[in-house]
Length: 215
Image 1: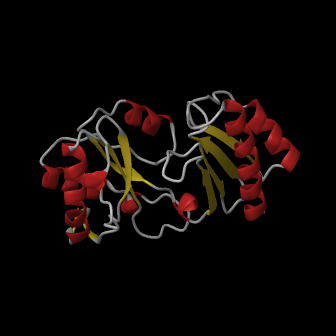
Image 2: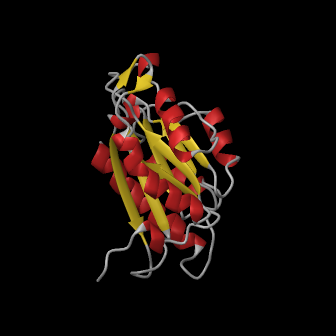
């Protein structure tokens, strides 16, 4: 069986999140070796030409959990703009209202550059579960979990709800608390790939597996 590539995916009109390795050397605020940036250009261009709205995410250096302006991705974004020969918007951290607004405003054929993954997220413990009724069908539920170094937990439900459901806790919740929050979440829906009740049930079961894994 031949391997699939991004050229085999139907990305027209969709947002595509691309984790890139733009951890490049800098000197005096400028990129001194852009080979990693250039290596990503064919993928980015292929997605843009296919009508996708592209969101790029990377990190730079090892800031040990602290924000350091010297390790911001602005110089990388400037070099990427030169290589793509297009004006693209830029945002800061991967978390926050500004970033969410920038992503919402993206249109097909546009790219959001230099979206930075914070160090605490890169060092977090994570877990993933997904399920589909058909072997080759679209996922009926995709569940993720993350526990930061400080103990804060984020658990998410996607595919099972109309919009992503994000559950945030100062520490991992109890099984009963998590189950109640999953049951109370809005947006579970029914379609040929699964009923709303099934999506709610499997989300609770799989998130409990994630909670136990991260405990």
